[in-house]
Length: 203
Image (cartoon, rainbow, N blue to C red; front, side, top):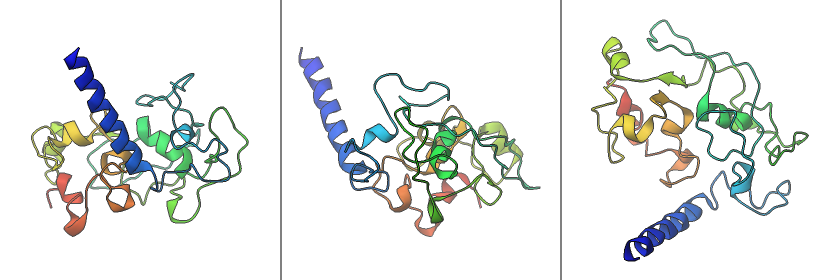
């Protein structure tokens, strides 16, 4: 019984901290006039009838983009980069500008679209590549990268454990959509003196 109470207390405080971090952040849409629920989480998540069409989609409640993207390419890039998948596809389901932000809960006729600096679009050639496998083999091939299985991320464990999702580098590898770190631009940690970039890049 004591163990159960201790676990419940941990989850209570974790949930409280989570809500405090996302509340007031760039992803807090609870006061937007297009969100008549007044809730923070519902624009992306639902406890029932979630969309499971995308891997790594946690209780997803938002329309998923069907856009075809032009991926990043470079003659010095050793990774294989194809279409965005997993959690990056979820991020792009607002930030590509083709899906309305208010298309959640089954709605598909919204009219609030991401614009300005927050709109990434479908041409990803000038953005950091995403949805590629970042493993020890890639680090060996590209000697400008640290081995993610042994390199400390500065977030408590290794790059693989703390920043990769199913061994892939995704948008959420560098951006904390829930603002858990409290760092500007929803970064997982500060990029002062390029600290975030230099977590993976050995240059």
